Image (cartoon, rainbow, N blue to C red; front, top):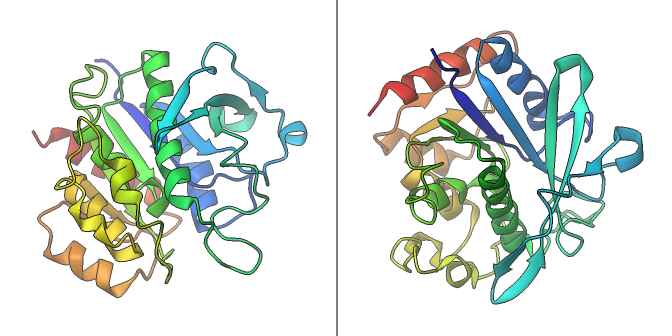
Length: 270
């Protein structure tokens, strides 16, 4: 029986970033799922905070070199890779010096969102999917983490729906306790609109705040995981009112096995 393939599109992974709820899951979940007998690929952004020399990142020339168009501008896509030897897994990094040179992740040192966070999230999501196409690796399930990955379900169900690599892919979205009070660029809706995505498809982003970005993920995902003990109450209410399969919060001791079973459940739902 062929191994199921799981694509992880994560926001943070330790040891490349300091330990946090997200980064610890980013480190240990893929390893655990691999040990459960599944094939994995793992991605994260190459933030400026990632020390390339210490972590031995190197560019993958055969995967780099394409440009992604966002808001009618070309942005070079650079792919780097590093290995976590103890876990026998590689981590791919999506890099672009315009979007990922900040020493901080999604907010500056005053805690204010970066003005280009909408484009950074779009670039990251598209960069991962285009790289997977170059790898000719067809994921059975895609697991995206946190609001920074919230547009992945939309892209899979709309922009990449006709690509044979993704035509059968299911998408699971993890909601974390990562709410913000600001609004992303109001032009985010226009930046996502394309030949494959209509304004109606992303109408919820008329006001691209945290709740509406989360609603977009819920609209196109196949399953939801609660990744924090507490999440934004408005998002929690939306999840409760959805018809999606939901995995409630799991503690550190249980989550790998619980996530693996949840993946199997989602994959069995046709």
